[in-house]
Image 1: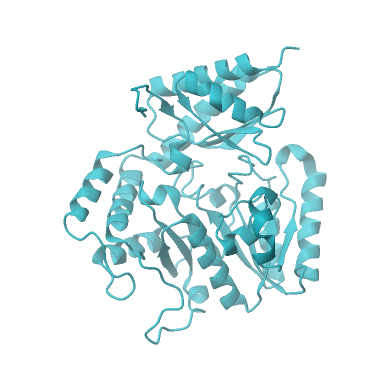
Image 2: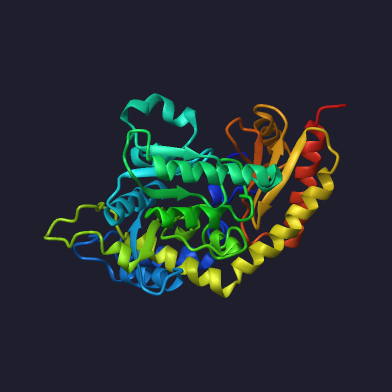
Length: 391
């Protein structure tokens, strides 16, 4: 990346996780340019462009169910809104179970299941009151934390939401992103899924950040061998264009009533042809360049190098993550924000995560070269060592 003064930066954020294939990948850029000259805008669900149908076919072929359906959207939050609506229609219960430190977007429905008070506070009176919450345990917290979290899930499903609504939806990130690259304790995803299904609730996995190779698997739930009932994807999918989707088995999606001429969920830019062209090109690049495998390989190199370089450094609490979703937890409020600002001087673009901006989050593109990877490890390590409190 270059700023207006010509300074160069190595982007270790992928622009909020979007540019998994890099910025302006030639094949994606060419697809966008070609489609923009052919048909800039379509008519969504009334006269769908051919590319919309092609993308839907590609997505359902990648879905973890045999008979899948997909609905396109523009943003991750909108994909979450679709998932919440779908789960309510299919389960017949409006109540929701979400998790502490979870992030699902900032539109009103998505904000209801997002955890952080900073985002929720000004709008609390407008938010749906039928959302229960349970802890999200990390491996380092031990088996007691895992057992306590699963007990809380059991209790919430039995008790219902705070407003008395029966819970029909359990929504979670298989790895929490904005919460701080928080990888769940082994067995947590499976335990939640088993309890939800026993209670007649549907499990939604928000993989807007983690989907399409970010964690070294096509979808992050594959690490735990758990298949959700509904799946939200976005960010990398659009190749840089705003595009997301909600996927589910046909048996669940069929809960939506048949259109009688007016769709009860639609948007002006549904299935935008330029966005669909970019997504199709991205999926080609993902497969042809082996980006899922590459994310796993260079993610391991990156995380191992950072652990070694930061071992014993004061103020470094944890180095965690999977693939190219890595969190460096630092000691102190706004600690990561301070490091991210200093990193600009070293030519690095970094972002923060965690409720107190205590986690430096790395979500780089999967097309980093060996030289860029080596530089990233050295520069991040040196920046943190310079920041570290002197003992």
